[in-house]
Length: 117
Image (cartoon, rainbow, N blue to C red; front, side, top):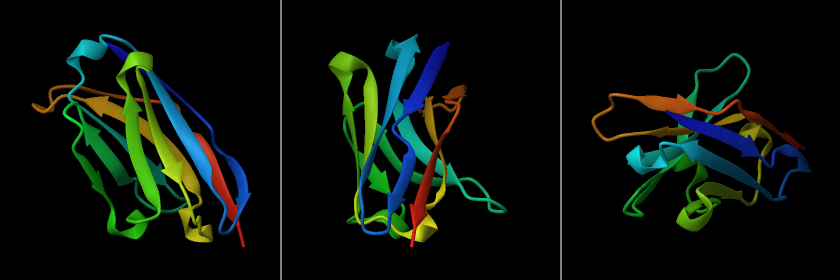
């Protein structure tokens, strides 16, 4: 099993920056892919960005050029650097980890990001 703990959310003004962290523990050797999802009130959870164990990244169109996903394998931690934040980025952000076969995945507890206009 893999346990995930997010941190780094908060309140920021539009145009500001935040960095989210997701620390993994447990059977981390089994992780092939990790990602950040977000869910705004009244909306479905959506994928924001993902990163594979090989370092390949992917982003939602809405965050390309503003957000950067990365991971520090030595610290078992994934990051999401969010720049030029907009009010529409306001959501609960969740960390997710899983394998390519999609036979399992794990979720963090979520961290609130609020961007004021």
